[in-house]
Image (cartoon, rainbow, N blue to C red):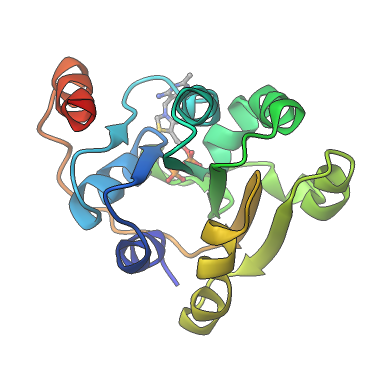
Length: 185
Ligand SMILES: Cc1ncc(C[n+]2csc(CCOP(=O)(O)OP(=O)(O)O)c2C)c(N)n1
Protein backbone atom coordinates (compact mmCIF):
# COMPACT_ATOMS: atom_id res chain seq x y z
CA UNK A 1 0.00 0.00 0.00
CA UNK A 2 1.25 3.48 -0.82
CA UNK A 3 1.54 6.46 1.51
CA UNK A 4 -1.10 8.52 -0.26
CA UNK A 5 -3.55 5.62 0.08
CA UNK A 6 -2.95 5.54 3.85
CA UNK A 7 -3.32 9.32 4.00
CA UNK A 8 -6.55 9.39 2.01
CA UNK A 9 -7.99 6.66 4.29
CA UNK A 10 -7.47 9.02 7.22
CA UNK A 11 -10.03 11.43 5.78
CA UNK A 12 -12.88 9.16 6.95
CA UNK A 13 -11.60 9.35 10.54
CA UNK A 14 -10.89 13.04 11.00
CA UNK A 15 -13.02 16.14 11.46
CA UNK A 16 -12.95 19.77 12.58
CA UNK A 17 -11.28 18.80 15.84
CA UNK A 18 -8.23 17.28 14.13
CA UNK A 19 -5.02 19.16 13.46
CA UNK A 20 -2.57 17.47 11.11
CA UNK A 21 1.15 18.19 10.86
CA UNK A 22 2.94 16.64 7.88
CA UNK A 23 6.67 16.22 7.27
CA UNK A 24 8.28 18.12 4.43
CA UNK A 25 8.52 16.81 0.88
CA UNK A 26 6.21 14.28 -0.64
CA UNK A 27 4.22 13.58 2.54
CA UNK A 28 3.18 17.23 2.93
CA UNK A 29 2.15 17.23 -0.73
CA UNK A 30 0.07 14.10 -0.21
CA UNK A 31 -1.59 15.53 2.89
CA UNK A 32 -2.33 18.76 0.99
CA UNK A 33 -3.90 16.86 -1.91
CA UNK A 34 -5.74 14.09 -0.03
CA UNK A 35 -6.91 15.52 3.31
CA UNK A 36 -9.17 18.40 4.32
CA UNK A 37 -7.44 21.78 4.16
CA UNK A 38 -5.84 23.71 5.78
CA UNK A 39 -3.32 21.78 7.90
CA UNK A 40 0.33 22.37 8.88
CA UNK A 41 2.23 21.34 5.75
CA UNK A 42 5.89 21.60 6.69
CA UNK A 43 8.16 22.63 3.85
CA UNK A 44 11.91 23.11 3.73
CA UNK A 45 13.75 21.66 6.69
CA UNK A 46 13.44 18.04 7.73
CA UNK A 47 13.23 16.74 11.30
CA UNK A 48 10.57 19.08 12.67
CA UNK A 49 7.08 17.52 12.47
CA UNK A 50 7.03 15.81 15.87
CA UNK A 51 8.34 18.92 17.65
CA UNK A 52 5.72 21.07 15.93
CA UNK A 53 2.99 18.53 16.69
CA UNK A 54 4.04 18.30 20.34
CA UNK A 55 3.76 22.08 20.72
CA UNK A 56 0.35 22.13 19.07
CA UNK A 57 -0.90 19.25 21.21
CA UNK A 58 0.23 20.79 24.48
CA UNK A 59 -1.25 24.19 23.62
CA UNK A 60 -4.55 22.76 22.33
CA UNK A 61 -5.56 19.98 24.72
CA UNK A 62 -9.13 19.97 23.35
CA UNK A 63 -7.89 19.15 19.82
CA UNK A 64 -6.43 15.91 18.48
CA UNK A 65 -3.07 16.39 16.81
CA UNK A 66 -1.81 13.81 14.32
CA UNK A 67 1.73 14.03 12.99
CA UNK A 68 2.35 12.24 9.71
CA UNK A 69 6.06 11.75 9.22
CA UNK A 70 8.37 9.96 6.82
CA UNK A 71 11.10 7.74 8.25
CA UNK A 72 13.79 10.14 7.03
CA UNK A 73 12.19 12.99 8.95
CA UNK A 74 11.75 10.77 11.98
CA UNK A 75 15.43 9.82 11.97
CA UNK A 76 16.49 13.45 11.66
CA UNK A 77 14.40 14.53 14.65
CA UNK A 78 14.47 11.43 16.85
CA UNK A 79 15.08 13.48 19.99
CA UNK A 80 11.58 14.90 19.66
CA UNK A 81 10.09 11.40 20.10
CA UNK A 82 11.79 11.21 23.48
CA UNK A 83 10.59 14.70 24.44
CA UNK A 84 7.04 13.78 23.38
CA UNK A 85 7.27 10.56 25.41
CA UNK A 86 8.42 12.53 28.45
CA UNK A 87 5.43 14.92 28.30
CA UNK A 88 2.98 12.32 26.94
CA UNK A 89 0.23 14.66 25.75
CA UNK A 90 -3.04 12.70 25.78
CA UNK A 91 -3.95 14.09 22.32
CA UNK A 92 -0.81 13.44 20.24
CA UNK A 93 -0.77 10.71 17.60
CA UNK A 94 2.31 9.98 15.48
CA UNK A 95 1.87 8.13 12.19
CA UNK A 96 5.20 7.02 10.72
CA UNK A 97 5.06 6.24 7.00
CA UNK A 98 8.19 4.18 6.49
CA UNK A 99 9.29 3.52 2.91
CA UNK A 100 12.93 3.00 4.01
CA UNK A 101 13.99 5.80 1.71
CA UNK A 102 14.23 9.52 1.09
CA UNK A 103 11.61 9.25 -1.62
CA UNK A 104 11.26 12.97 -2.22
CA UNK A 105 14.90 13.40 -3.21
CA UNK A 106 15.25 10.35 -5.41
CA UNK A 107 14.90 7.24 -3.26
CA UNK A 108 18.19 7.11 -1.35
CA UNK A 109 18.00 4.39 1.31
CA UNK A 110 17.48 5.42 4.96
CA UNK A 111 18.66 3.44 7.99
CA UNK A 112 15.15 3.01 9.44
CA UNK A 113 15.50 -0.78 9.30
CA UNK A 114 18.22 -0.50 11.99
CA UNK A 115 15.59 0.48 14.56
CA UNK A 116 13.73 -2.15 16.51
CA UNK A 117 10.74 0.13 17.08
CA UNK A 118 9.02 -2.12 19.63
CA UNK A 119 12.10 -2.42 21.83
CA UNK A 120 12.99 1.23 21.57
CA UNK A 121 9.49 2.51 22.26
CA UNK A 122 8.93 0.01 25.05
CA UNK A 123 11.53 1.88 27.05
CA UNK A 124 9.53 5.10 26.56
CA UNK A 125 6.18 3.66 27.78
CA UNK A 126 4.22 4.86 24.77
CA UNK A 127 0.46 4.50 25.40
CA UNK A 128 -0.32 2.78 22.08
CA UNK A 129 2.17 1.35 19.64
CA UNK A 130 1.87 -0.88 16.58
CA UNK A 131 4.38 -1.61 13.81
CA UNK A 132 2.66 -3.09 10.74
CA UNK A 133 2.84 -3.42 6.97
CA UNK A 134 0.20 -1.11 5.53
CA UNK A 135 -2.82 -2.68 3.82
CA UNK A 136 -6.53 -1.87 3.72
CA UNK A 137 -7.38 -4.54 6.29
CA UNK A 138 -4.58 -3.36 8.61
CA UNK A 139 -5.99 0.17 8.40
CA UNK A 140 -9.53 -1.07 8.97
CA UNK A 141 -8.36 -2.94 12.07
CA UNK A 142 -6.01 -0.34 13.58
CA UNK A 143 -6.60 3.24 12.44
CA UNK A 144 -9.54 3.98 14.71
CA UNK A 145 -7.80 2.52 17.79
CA UNK A 146 -4.66 4.44 17.00
CA UNK A 147 -6.57 7.70 16.76
CA UNK A 148 -8.99 7.23 19.65
CA UNK A 149 -6.89 5.55 22.33
CA UNK A 150 -6.20 8.21 24.94
CA UNK A 151 -2.51 9.11 25.13
CA UNK A 152 0.64 9.44 23.08
CA UNK A 153 0.17 6.92 20.31
CA UNK A 154 2.54 5.76 17.59
CA UNK A 155 1.59 3.76 14.50
CA UNK A 156 4.56 2.69 12.40
CA UNK A 157 3.45 1.58 8.94
CA UNK A 158 5.68 0.06 6.28
CA UNK A 159 4.56 1.52 2.96
CA UNK A 160 5.48 1.25 -0.72
CA UNK A 161 6.79 4.14 -2.81
CA UNK A 162 4.31 6.97 -3.35
CA UNK A 163 3.29 9.04 -6.34
CA UNK A 164 6.11 10.94 -7.97
CA UNK A 165 4.00 13.30 -10.08
CA UNK A 166 2.13 15.10 -7.26
CA UNK A 167 2.14 18.88 -7.73
CA UNK A 168 3.86 20.95 -5.08
CA UNK A 169 1.80 22.88 -2.51
CA UNK A 170 0.92 26.22 -4.13
CA UNK A 171 1.16 28.13 -0.80
CA UNK A 172 4.23 29.91 0.58
CA UNK A 173 4.98 28.82 4.18
CA UNK A 174 3.65 32.16 5.46
CA UNK A 175 0.37 31.53 3.62
CA UNK A 176 0.29 27.99 5.07
CA UNK A 177 0.59 29.46 8.57
CA UNK A 178 -2.00 32.17 7.91
CA UNK A 179 -4.52 29.71 6.49
CA UNK A 180 -3.98 27.30 9.36
CA UNK A 181 -4.33 30.01 12.01
CA UNK A 182 -7.76 30.93 10.60
CA UNK A 183 -8.96 27.66 12.08
CA UNK A 184 -8.54 29.23 15.53
CA UNK A 185 -10.69 32.33 14.81
C1 LIG B 1 17.71 19.22 6.80
C2 LIG B 1 17.32 18.75 5.42
N1 LIG B 1 18.13 17.86 4.78
C3 LIG B 1 17.79 17.42 3.53
C4 LIG B 1 16.68 17.90 2.90
C5 LIG B 1 16.30 17.43 1.48
N2 LIG B 1 15.14 16.55 1.56
C6 LIG B 1 13.87 17.03 1.35
S1 LIG B 1 12.69 15.88 1.54
C7 LIG B 1 13.85 14.69 1.84
C8 LIG B 1 13.44 13.26 2.11
C9 LIG B 1 12.46 13.12 3.27
O1 LIG B 1 12.38 11.73 3.60
P1 LIG B 1 11.20 11.11 4.36
O2 LIG B 1 10.86 11.93 5.54
O3 LIG B 1 11.52 9.66 4.61
O4 LIG B 1 9.96 11.21 3.37
P2 LIG B 1 9.80 10.61 1.88
O5 LIG B 1 10.52 11.58 1.00
O6 LIG B 1 10.39 9.24 1.86
O7 LIG B 1 8.33 10.62 1.67
C10 LIG B 1 15.15 15.21 1.81
C11 LIG B 1 16.40 14.43 2.03
C12 LIG B 1 15.88 18.84 3.61
N3 LIG B 1 14.76 19.35 3.06
N4 LIG B 1 16.22 19.24 4.87
